[in-house]
Every structure is written in C-alpha cells, then in structure tokens.
Image (cartoon, rainbow, N blue to C red; front, top):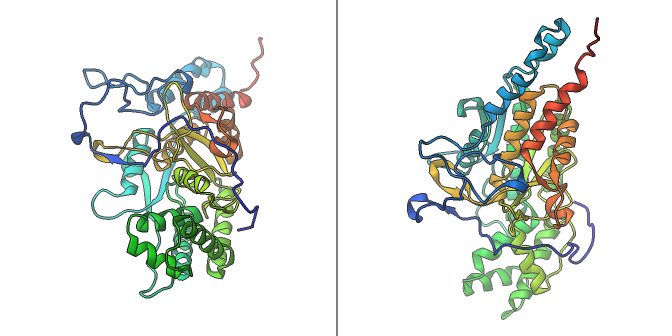
Length: 415
C-alpha cells in the first residue's frame, strides 16, 4: 500500500443526513412502518423520481415491476422481429434467460448471519432463488494468544486476504455459470482503527492499556491516543511482509477473475463517520488510510446513498478514490423482515442488477458493464470519492443493457 500523502487528503464532504450507525432493527420492535417505506425491490423507479419508500398493496402485491417482469418485457418488446428470418431469430435467442448464477463471499454459519442478510438482498432484487446463489464462507482467523498489537493487526488482515483468495481459487476451479461475485466485507486501516477505538473509548482502563501498548505516557489525551493508533495501524499495513504477500496473491487472483469475465463487487465500507471524527479532532492520516485491502483496478466498489427524492451519500459511507457508484443503503430489508443500513446492503443490489443486465445480454463484457453503470449514474454535489460516477439509476442501466443488443441486430432491407 503506497504512501499517497501525509495529512487529511479528503476534500470537504456533503453531509445532509444525521450520523448513521448502521443498526439492524426488528420490525416487531418498531411502530407501524411508515407508508413511504419500500418493502420490496430497491429498483422501483429512476432515483430522481423515487419517494422515500413504497409499500405493497393491500392484497400483498408489489406496486412495482420486478426484475422478472422487466426481462419478460424486454423479450416481448422485440418479439415482432421473430418472423424476419434466421439471423434475427438467433439474435432473439440471446434474450432467453440463461443459467447465470451469483456467488456471495461472506460470513456464514448457525443462526442468521451477515451473509444471510446479504443473500436476502440479492434474492429480493434478482430472478435467482436462494438455491441458485453460491455462498462461500470468507473471514479472518483469530491471532494466537498473547499476540502483540502489531501481530493482531497483521494476522487479521493477512488471514482475511488469504481466505478471500482461497474462495476465488475455488470459484475459478469450479466456475459454473457465475459471472458476478458479491463481497459485502472489508478490512482497511481505518476500519481496524475504528473498531479498536470503539472497544476502549468508553472504558478508561482499556483505553489506558491501549495507550501503554502504543508507547504513550499515562494520562495521554484522546487525540494523542487516536493519533498513535492511526499511525500504528497504518505502519503495520505499510510494512508487514505477511500482508504484502497476501495482498499480492489476492491481486493476482483478482486479475484471473477479471480475465474469466467475472466481476467482483465489494463495499466501500461504513467508516465515514469515524473519518469525520478524526478530521474534527485534527488526527492526521494517509490518503489511502480508508482503502479496503480488496480494492484494486478490477473491483467494482459500491458506496451507500440515503434514497428518496433528495438522494444524498450516507454519512457512514466511506469515501475512496476507488468508489465506482452509489446506491441506496439505508433502511434495507434483510433476512427475517428486519431492516438495516450499510454499504453491505447497497453492494448486493448492484450485484443483482449486474446479473440481470447479463441475463438480458449475456455477451456483455466486464468493461461494458462498467460503462453502462457509469452512464446510468447521476452525478450529485457529493465528491467523486464519495459517489464515484454518481448515484445509480437501475432502470436506466437495464434500458442500456437492452439497447446494447441492438448493436448486433441485422440490418433489414426491403425487398
């Protein structure tokens, strides 16, 4: 990880919503859902025309068109061409739903896991059922007992990268029809610093122990502890041979996935609020301090917006030069009828959208998918680091995917 700059390199950010903590909420514990909450698909209308949320009809039906309906409409819209001859029939055959599937790299286990919540979002926003989505367990392992602070940081990061690379190798060995991976996970210097700070900030004894491990004198201020923590975490990421080795392997596997035509969708992260805290306290950090170890030239990085008519980037969404697009990541329905906030639940919507685009046109390359997503994104007043190309309009992306088929349509001549 190269040293881009010293100090706070992020430009000022547009913040229009209160601080988000990405809670998971049970519907049973809430008052009745407001009439403007979407309980169905996230891809209801163009972003500029969306209300805050939509509700199902009284008969239980959805007030919006599903992806399945859109795919049927796409095929029906071109069906009159079927009598034009073999060439056109061959062209139309590409509109039939294929056997493409999705892979999810995440944490899975007993009970309802983060991976289950992510899978629910993919399932709700695509034609694929749960048994058509491949789930692969990915995560970090615990450092050995008695490990130092540096060793804990190093082990967690390197083991996460190795676990992801193992999952990638398994997929390349048995790709099936998978063309897109969702990984709603991230490890970055800022995330590790954020988690360590949250563990001690309200516990004076734990904070004093951390300060001592950081080499600070007794009575160090919060700013001094945070600055030392940021410097230590960043130093481990910069200098660890284990992390460098694991990152090199991961980047190599990522390139192989790209060559195989498989897109890797990852989250921007949820540390935007913590970065604001560091800025407010005057803590200095590198320009790439917020970048996940999963980010590279091949990954498609998704930030979270707030949804609604006045859609803005969510406060919690982590800015980065790698962000590709943003989409609604607030109050998203997850497993068991709960709702949750986070880039973890923005990314799988984009994953489902990519799968649907390739259902419409299976010949779309990774670069063509990226181009369509960029064209379908609306630039806002947010910085490029916050929103990438902008907030994604899924209907526009689907329309562009359908339009991409016309490039191969045979020219019809009158006899």
